[in-house]
Length: 449
Image (tube, rainbow, N blue to C red; front, side, top):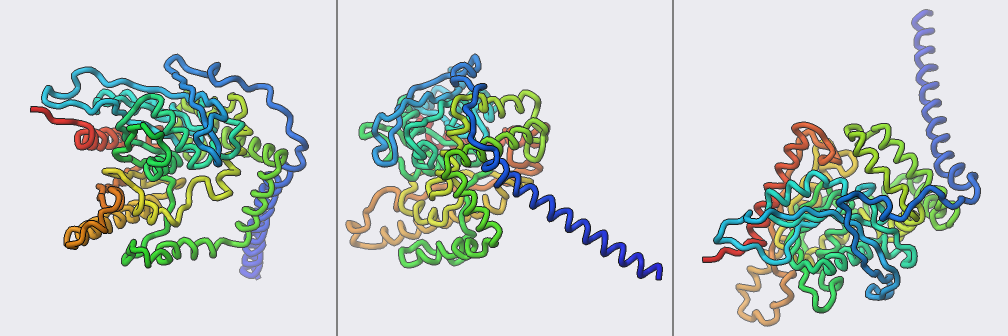
């Protein structure tokens, strides 16, 4: 009898625990998806925000860039105050028989919720050790770049962000750049590299030599070992992602539908954005998850942009852009786009082994996909060389030019390796500096006799 009673008690305790977990989840979903966005009423105007220049640091710099919209990207619809920071290279970094290509720079693009602050240690370190001007720039709706309000979702889409960054670099009169992207910043870097000929102005000499991706948020299907990139195999490339999409649970599909419904309503969407962002800010301040190792200074810096004018409306525009196909993240067609248009000399990828935000297996899928693209170009170039009638195969440079590709797993690192303390951050910084030293020597340095 005692055994039976114990078994009944265990079953009852287990049932109570499951019921409690379900109840907590339902309450959480109700609060986040119903009470906060809908029952909170009409959102009031924020009174505690300031123009971005009033939030600037002593070393902050701003550059005015005009941005268009989806229909006319070249139009001067709205002036954007782009916030950036930079570190200049010391004089005499290279030997007398070596000259750096003029107007060269290494440009850092932060991820979601990041800013120029994310690269505060890397900028001076890279400039001093690598010998090249290092620039970090804030992407709206983050950091201290002003939030465009007249361009609709365009300023917050991949294409719009890439266009803004290209215009910014052109106004700095740069010609040779290496793009270093972290998390969602890698999406913008990839878009810039893929669409550079369309994004830059007619007389621009801007060129992306290569890219370094840190914890990339560019998610592609796991490529098949027999994957080919010939035109006849387009469906083979796209099908793995299609299968994954079809396995999305009914609960997730329902939430996604409801989320889209909310953000397409101005009032509900604004309430949703505010509550979501404030919860995230609270996680930063209390050191939850990826933010566990942040210093007090870092926590303040990561939440300061919430004092910028229109931060909430800008985030709403980004949420909308992310759900209409022009946002960030999953991209089943990337392999074909890279095969056709990626014109760089290298792509280096690194990711923390403990990264739960952009898992290392997804970073490895991106590496494998790009390696297949590069190998397919080698094969195509060999076929073109062997073909006696080369005139018909002399297509654009990007369709035949190979690029170098590398992958590094960062031990004991998570999603924010630049914010970790001790040996893991030192190892990360050493890797970045050494990788950029090698790539600058290969791409930016001219040997003279």
